[in-house]
Length: 250
Ligand SMILES: O=c1[nH]c(=O)c2ncn([C@@H]3O[C@H](COP(=O)(O)OP(=O)(O)OP(=O)(O)O)[C@@H](O)[C@H]3O)c2[nH]1
Ligand SMILES: [Mg+2]
Image (cartoon, rainbow, N blue to C red; front, side, top):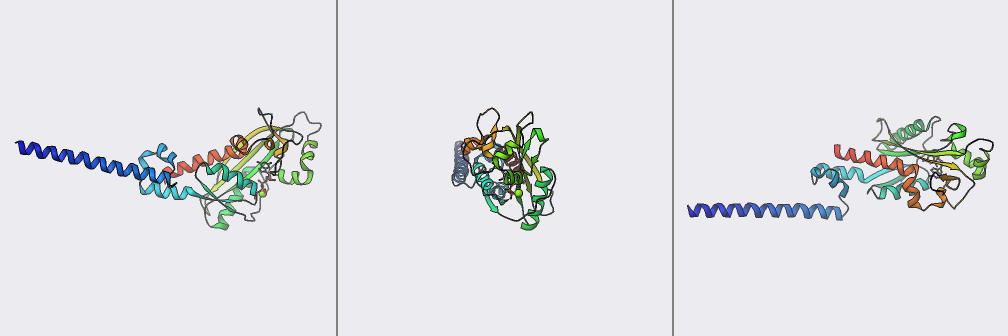
């Protein structure tokens, strides 16, 4: 009787001991992976049930690298700064993808579809528009050509005689999972007004776009300040949220 109770006691002790060792091994491995950057800590919080399954490992791999097709190095630099926080590495491909004429959405979608065909793989593209309320949204996606021909002062002159200088910056990211798949769009918008140039910037129309409620043009803001409220930052927030849901479903 006593022998049986003793052996029962020993086996219970063994179970507790083994469970503790297993738990310790799992916890150590998870934190080691977080520390080494192999595992995004946010995935642990969002979906703890996925911890250390093969699923999560492959998800992490797909999330890690993203090809951004653009010929604009300033876009690349901002996107890297913003997505660096989400632990996504941006690989830039400067492909000559023709831009269709149409709405920002149409341009972004077609640009991405063509880029995915050329790359034969997944990618993101982005189209930015600067829209003037007084001109019913123009120049919109054609701002690049207006800026080139008219310059910063010219963008102001364009609005002389109109009752408002209100404008908004619109950024549309397109994500394609690969050739033949319909690109998905993620849009971010920042409202402001067109003002005479203030601040120093290497990026296009930053000096003439004053963001509502800040009293500052994009060119007068630090990189962090701009990224936190910019059209691009807001669009990327949506893109990263989408990539996380993809991760959970993969
Ligand atoms: O001051 C700025 N702050 C910004 O945040 C910003 N984002 C874009 N732009 C400019 O607006 C036009 C968009 O045209 P866009 O989208 O076709 O770009 P792009 O042709 O330069 O590159 P891409 O089409 O290869 O990606 C181009 O002139 C860009 O330089 C910005 N200027
Ligand atoms: Mg372009």
